[in-house]
Image (tube, rainbow, N blue to C red):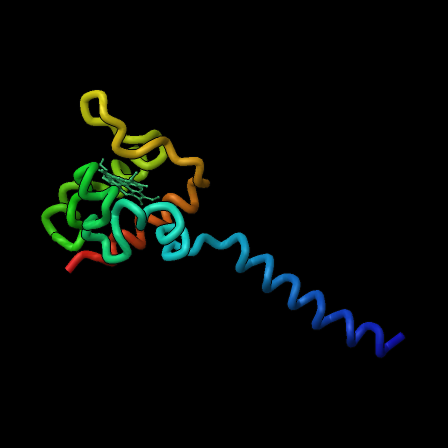
Length: 110
Ligand code: HEC
């Protein structure tokens, strides 16, 4: 009985750890999977898609300060259009993941 309890404890602990990791928003991972194809791994937007759509250089402090976190969140969540051209489709990411990806985008600022 005692032995069983000793075995069960680390197992429960390990489970708790993995679930936390799975649900905690990892900005870098979210960004790599959902944003980098346009905004680039380095935030410069120099990808094929980014160049075509006119993604800005997010290493530029002026570009970063031109947008608030709230505005960034809204544009990602609801999508962004310029005239009739869709720049970003409304995101299916959770609010938490969107916020984490914006926080990560901020780290590109030089
Ligand atoms: C299909 C290409 C594409 C994808 C995918 C994409 N973006 Fe964008 N995004 C753009 C373009 C183009 C613009 C408009 C020019 C700019 O601000 O870089 C833009 C604008 C933005 C803006 C400024 C919004 C505003 O209101 O001015 C932020 C912040 C942003 N993107 C973050 C992200 C994040 C974070 C992700 C991933 C969750 C993402 N984008 C995914 C193409 C994309």
